[in-house]
Image (cartoon, rainbow, N blue to C red):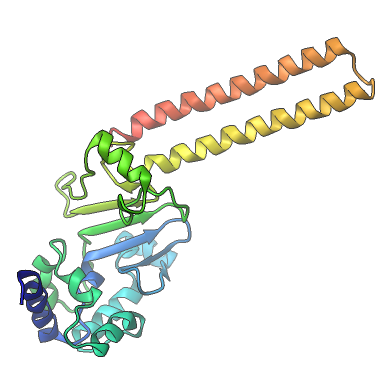
Length: 266
């Protein structure tokens, strides 16, 4: 048995000393899908809705929903939550295999918290050490799940800027990992991950403005062809339309630059 397998075996034994369904990700990992108001602690279970009433009473319910606490309780009492059946199928099909619950629980952002979690009642509010925030379901081929084998964008950015840092202690919080989707790890050397999403929104607005200009010019050409306006009037209207377009795009660029400076100072 090689060192990696020994480490996985040690993690498996620790988890199974609590119960065959134990997985530390339910406590230490949180993915929050802002665009739909859902959360989960692993990419296998379907995300569940974050109840607004729970957040009002307790802001940590973004991670500590009553649903998650119920699943934590099942794990602490030796049960296997149905939503985690992906891992159970892996383990049951081959007792020598290591499922994602073993791998995730053995990570540096999870395993050190084992003894505290083991003694918990599942009702406590906990601070996750691994947080993913999903702003959009769009893919920019540069998030934390991608790699240089799958993304030429990752490859070029790493070559130009060096590897992305994926672990950071920020303002002395307990967060070890903070990742945004799409965009990649927060606090990276490029455009800080989640900023690429906001910047993409401004580009979309600029495209909309240019489309309005195009439609206006097409309407002018139609009126010119129908002799409803003169050549001079057409040129004047086109100049006015172009000026309005340039002014609005300039304003968007100005606001974007200000926000970029503000966001990247966080």
